[in-house]
Length: 117
Image 1 (cartoon, rainbow, N blue to C red):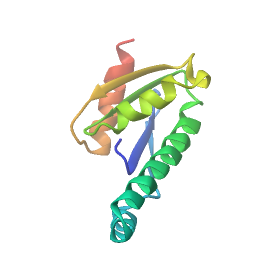
Image 2: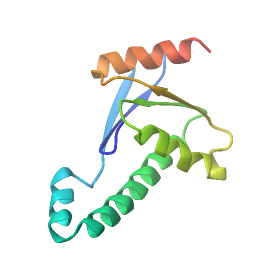
Image 3: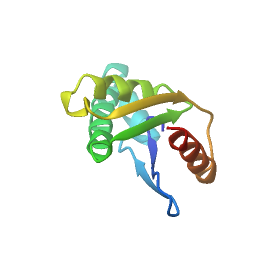
């Protein structure tokens, strides 16, 4: 995951399915708000990240265990947001630093992580 994209892979013995979610705060929106002012751009970015993490949180509520991974700090930011919310107390959330991967590599990474439990 990063600040604009998240791949939600459901671990199962069946063929794994990966859904792709995209944030509404695109690079173009960032540039447009930056043209007006840097302060406005940071406010828009913060609001967008809050909405993005809320959207991801709604998906995460469906699971007992979650693995957050990716090349940016977005996974740590999301983890901090979720950790502060009592709705996620019973969900085991693991955070792992990982390089950018293809969907098949992500699925293998998820399979290996959850098979070891």
